Length: 286
Image 1 (spheres, rainbow, N blue to C red):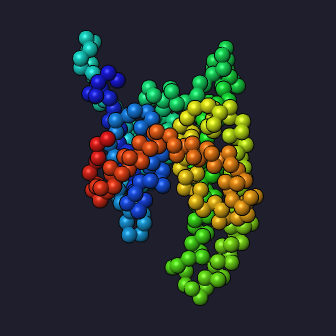
Image 2 (cartoon, rainbow, N blue to C red):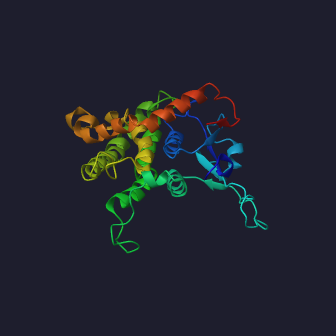
């Protein structure tokens, strides 16, 4: 990609959370795009009064997913000596699901080679079992957040609402008792198991990050559920030492490390710039 004219057009379509992009999956994608040094646009959508995705977003992705990355390939080159007759503009590429978006972007933009761990062990190229541990971890953790960890965190939020308005106050003691039972017998044991698993993975990663000794796309995707959950984990159940940070200090250090990354800080600055025009749906140039 030698010039701006030859670069693909990348647009991040997203829905802010309470008119803010932070504490949403969109920030992870913003962070990744910053790390990839990709020029991109942002188009903001707003949920309906029923807290559903707006119909306009369904025109981007049939499920109304957010965030969505749309990549418009550059037009066929007309400057080369070879004839470009018959070449047609390729259709936009629509990407959804955080792990899939991260994997595709890293495969197609040069900076991705810096973020993704080396795939093959020396002399094992293309062989079954020839992949490095760090590469396999990155592949796994790209999808672990949404496939394994997030369902329990989302369920904890949904069940927790049984203890709050708009549940009528005269039946709230009953719904609260049911919610507490589900949280204590099912949700918390599984969340505790996942935090313990992350602690074990960090202990054996060969560095301070989840896959190896440097930041990977998996770290960026994993940041969202960890940032989102850290403030509520202690209220979910009993932790050794009185808090999840005391029981699993390695995970706490990892969360602090991710928050200190320059790319994360840049994505936060981008969010602040967007907040002033959050009510506008027009693309914002980055």
